[in-house]
Length: 415
Image (cartoon, rainbow, N blue to C red; front, side, top):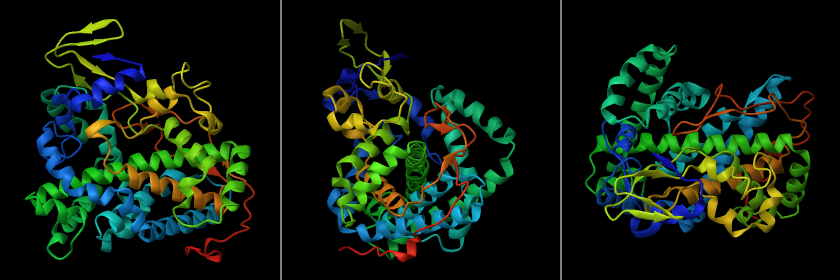
């Protein structure tokens, strides 16, 4: 496989004429034996599913149902505030709360299927072992599928928390199976739209699981890292808070705040959900790029980590510096592709972006990061297919916490 660290390769590999062909490695990302919207290599089959659910993710749809989104954010703010109050100087894991927010949005906005009896168990962290094992499977992504099938079962049994992971998997299975039955009584949901395309309920449940991984782990990691960086940089935090407090706080207006836009872009850059390359095969005609010829079948890819931390494009690439986006170069704008590109880009990017803006806006508005300090000076990442935090926590402490503002004391209504 050849890694290309030049953003000029993004268009030919992933966009032009539908991009280069996906490899059979994506079969390693099947869920319960099903090819999902993400993992299928069949563009026509993907298009059938994508066309069905795309309207749920349009900017207009997200804006129209913003009340549902903000109700989830309100619960997130209240839960985080309570954890801070109870912490008494002990670490608070941001990722636990940001993942719960992602799951809440999925269940209430996308699936329209509340978590019923499993809700509190899952929100309290019972699903995390399932999520962690799915993410950890990313280390096998680049193996040939036949070899992955040989390795994964023994690896799964040898894990120290295999029993907890099995229990968590059962909870998730119960929820997604129940959600997949919902289309019989509900309309305009993720599940009902797939059912109308003739997708079997078992496969719909698998798609729900795939969406849960992206909507909790990927989203939760970016949001947690962004909040962690804001706590590390009080000058940035104060500037952002001044902008938010001066904006009036009307829902969805947050995406028009210039400095908040910079903070979100920098957060996405420093915490790529898929840090590693997305492999593709050079087509039969071969490919010429930057003075080099790549024969047909050559496996090539561009890794987000290589682009996002390229010092030739991003000066001081490891530094959280939102100001860089106030005067972004064309190369910076080209190379920041947190949701990928082309016809295979993340369908949920509008929803995820709205979540990020709403959550960061409200955390800062309620001053929840006041006095917060990072437990560690750096967060290390496993660069598997899905980026994973070493140690599985993103912790802050509030050594001398005094709450000046309670979330319930402020109104969440539109002006």
